[in-house]
Image 1: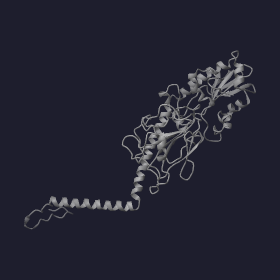
Image 2: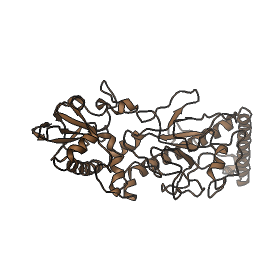
Image 3: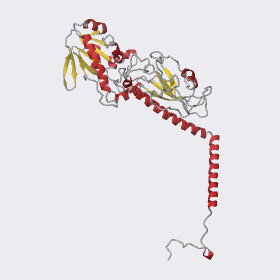
Image 4: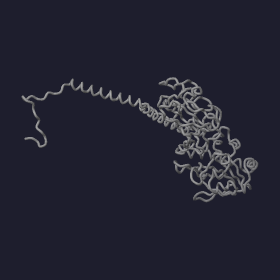
Length: 435
């Protein structure tokens, strides 16, 4: 009985079973299919090559690999900056390494130029704990660091208001966004890409970067931007474009670090506030000693402050003027633009300091520490130009800013620096009551 929907198998005449296909026939058929596919692939590739599509796709893949290498390098630079104190105890955080000048993957021993000057060379991948990063064309990455952030020689000031040096723009000349108040980067990483017309490079090597041991000599053959050695002013750098058929266009791909990138990452460290408070403790102790009546305090405050209302007010003087030992001065001086002092002109405890949910304290002097700048909104603060950096309102909030300008002896704020939200700037004023 047959199953509905299925046709009974027909048998050949004579009762013989069907002959199976021969293995040789199947093999020949497979080879023919492979040959046909290969021929189609070659013809397709030829058509793409004729239209420039094959080169364009290869360039796009190389572009993507370059972006990946740049991202790794950028992350490592930020990590280096926010862990600098662990490798260099007592020197503080935020510093970036000098570039590799000798083609060995390491930051050189000694200075990279004079203080406050930018430096450029290859990325010091060994110093950063990275593998030998290459862009999509097999070239090593290059790197420029601003004088305001490099580790040797260190800048006199380094904090969340430090200026950048590199103004970035796209191929049309439009500014690229940088996480900094002045829209300038403190570090730029370059993926050089393929050689442009006029650039002469040795073949890439499997180990070590192509080129000589002198980064300064190799620079114009890898980086498309004129770079003024020893420059202390701003430098414009253009983001390259992907133009496979144009060997004259700028093709350097860039990644960059702004000072906000460093301090936003540093703020996420659980011990960041402790580090800032330890610095404030040292300043408060030294300032209390200098301002004490009967200890030459009257002459000292007259030298470093100015009378305003009931108070004598001034910016925090140098750590040397505070009487701190030489070995403790540099980290404090790098933050002193964030601090002001105020002392009662009549040597009484005339200053009232209000604390949240606490009874006001009465002090004969205070140390005021500005938090991070307010970045957005109607109360946004700017600390770039000299006039802005002398304006209390660009550092302090509300009545604190007003009273630091008018000498009214009333202030409000926490006694210690705190980070309430690690994803947002810690802008609250700190008011230390000095004994």
